[in-house]
Amino acid sequence: MVTSGILVCNMNYENPKIAEVAALLKERFNELQQKSDILKAPELKALYADIPLLDPSERSSFGQQINQLKNELTEMAKAANEASEVVESIDVTAPFDINTRLDQLPKLFSTELGGRHPLMTELDEILDIFYRMGFEAVESRQIDNEYYMFDSLNFPKDHPARDEYDTFITEDGYIAPAHTSVMQNRVLKSGKDQLEQGKPIAVVVPGRTFRNEDLDARHEHTFYQLEGVYVGKGVTVGNLIATLKEFMKAYYKRDVEIKTQPFYFPFTEPSFEFAISCPFCDKVGCSVCGEGWIELLGCGMIHPNVLKEAGIDPNVYTGFAWGVGFMRMAMIKYGIEDIRHFESAKLDFLRQFK
Ligand SMILES: [Zn+2]
Image (cartoon, rainbow, N blue to C red; front, side):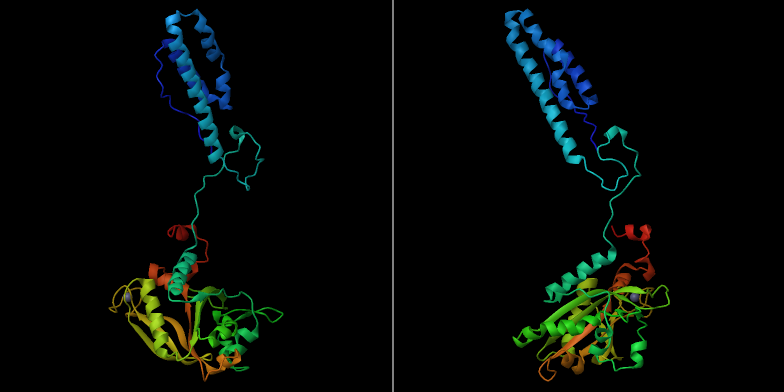
């Protein structure tokens, strides 16, 4: 962008001749490419040449007014120069030479500033809540192997539970993680030392996950999860429920009731499905929740075999873990009806979150 360089004349000149030249030069100034050229104007020089012709009593005031005009023009040139330096930026993607004269540039399409993807904004907010609760964040991976996806998480070999995940597998046998739990073994191993020094492991793991799903309004092949892992001495189901309840309250910015019911995951024992009371209708039932409750995540106490696999003694330490799809959390928060919007690159959808 370039400013027009139009500046308003503020000074008044008593002498009518100087006033006339001032008005003329200021008009010309706006059209000049090189603004400092205004100081070389012949009309300005001509004014100086007038001084000796004047009555001596008028000379001093006349001379002062010319200097005043010259100073004003100098200031204008300086200001215009600075303004053009500040606002002129280079678009490296522009299909023309950056040295092209500004008035010869091709006309560009109109543009507007973009915004962050709503999921990343939500993730920042979610992580902020967990930072305040003393958790650290570790990023998950987008390619992994069978050991971290299944073996390290107490999935028996050839167990049907492995098939339920509908994982994408490369020809070389690598796996696109179907849950952020692929990081559990790594997080536990790397936190083992601090655990022995009396400091609990408290880590959340945001990541992109993949499943070979049939796509519909609630299922995507690519989605986002947040894993949580907490291990220490004397950690109980009570700690698990209190942690998640505090998080839900902070995220939805209101008190929520929670409900758990038994479930099965190979890597937690006991395992639960975790539901919250609908933050919109107080359990009366609405279009978001159906009948007042929203099932949000799976969680449980980390299975002793998973701790053992990471070199942690399950007789000394216990812990809990959960995995939550934070796309779903955001959908509930904003009343988004179709999960596929997030990865659709639909501008109409994305602009609502700017
Ligand atoms: Zn509701």
